[in-house]
Image (cartoon, rainbow, N blue to C red; front, side, top):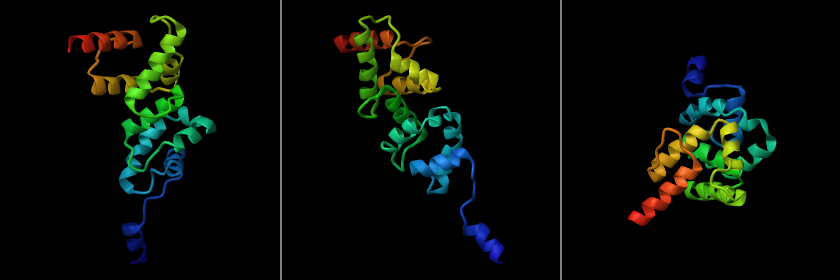
Length: 152
């Protein structure tokens, strides 16, 4: 009877790295948050650095979803002061301004791509700003935003 009760009421035990990261980030307290375990596993390269993990821990909230977690990771990589999409895009545009060329590579976007977050970035840009392209770039996003703002 005791074994049955323990199985019924005890949280499942897992000791893999993804589960440990969930606990460190404060995301592993409820069973439904364990669905983030696979998502964390896909981002294991990001979590290889204690500095990045520490910076992310300061931003994470217990209710964060996979998309929000991705955006917060991108904000850490871009050294963005906040983790909202608009601020992140502005930070990336500032990279272009500092390079003094719209055709320059953004250091921050290269970091985002290096850690497997570029597809998530462009998906969030499409959702947040309505910008979609087969081969998206910061230059085309900026030009699209300028054209849309002047036409509306």
